[in-house]
Amino acid sequence: MRVLLVGAGLSGAVIGRQLAEAGHHCHVIDARPHVAGNCHTARDAETGVMMHVYGPHIFHTDDQGAWDYVNRFARFLPYQNRVKATAQGRVYPLPVNLLTINQFFGTTLRPDEARAFIEAKADRSITDPQTFEQQALRFVGRELYEAFFQGYTEKQWGCSPSQLPASILKRLPLRFNYDDNYFFHRFQGMPEEGYTALVERILDHARITVELGQEYDDGMAQGVDHVVWSGPLDGYFGYRLGRLGYRTLDFERFTYQGDYQGCAVMNYGDRAVPFTRITEHKHFSPWEAHEGSVCYREYARAAEPGDTPYYPVRLVQEKALLERYVALAQETRGVTFVGRLGTYRYLDMDVTVREALDAARVIAQAAAAGEAPPAFLDSPA
Ligand code: UDP
Image (cartoon, rainbow, N blue to C red; front, top):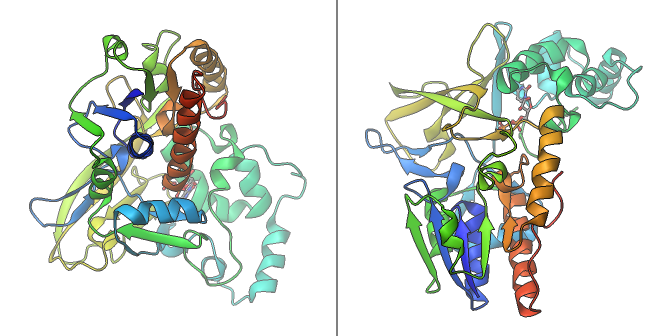
């Protein structure tokens, strides 16, 4: 089978690799001049720091298969994400844990006491939280919500947390101990030479060709047996039903001699601060030593045509439009839609790898059976 993969991010690379190893011929194109999509990393010319060009990416998972897979192609070094937050004139550890609670309230509570203390602050009239705000008020109470989540989320998503799904907040743990690891997964690490080197290795196969700086056009599908699309779902259809909403990010780069903030990620909860966070990239590679430092102030806003899409918004109006695009996609033969943009979901890298492995298997099996591979592994609507 000859397969065209549109997008050289994690999805396209993993699917291409798997299909190539199964004997298929894969051509991977990407409109950008580099592989790895939004997890692209590159060394800063001035300081030598490995930059997460499109914002921080930390690989964390409980999925042994996804972990083993990425470790086949890169050496992962231990990295634990320990985020700090500046809010209301003080610095706290995130995610909200016992130190955050005790510092914030000026208490010396032990775990059981803190649990009871927070439970007393929780709005127990909310029995089945649907929105981000309800989830926060039910589980952390109003004070912590206002300090750490409300302002940050308004900046990040450009709307009230009462309009966002509870699932976004459920990404973050709430801990009644002093564990300040941002993630609770068994495996966590960073590829020693960055994500772009990882993706280049995945794509390095005799039956894979890669063409960068190449936009897709419909004619390209003519000579191939199947297309794997990891670009924006609405983009495949020329945005003919309208545009699905995305948040994009603007990064304000600045350099510093020495250690600017002492950690990789500092979040800013206050509304009055216009950015959401500052990332100091040398701290993402703690095994390296650099005198100079490069930081990004991160600002979120609605993506306009031509902007890089980052986070699918998935509010009510997007959901209705998404359903219509999903229906269109399901009527389309010869294309499988994958990844964060192709399925319009807030995907972490490990889930992306897992789904890509599954997609490759399904596509190869369908081809072997002489059937058309499905448009989606699971309907994203
Ligand atoms: N969030 C927040 N305050 C914080 C960090 C996160 O309110 O200090 C909310 C915000 O709405 C964000 C969501 O939690 O979009 C998920 O956070 P995560 O750190 O997973 O976001 P990412 O790193 O993927 O941007």
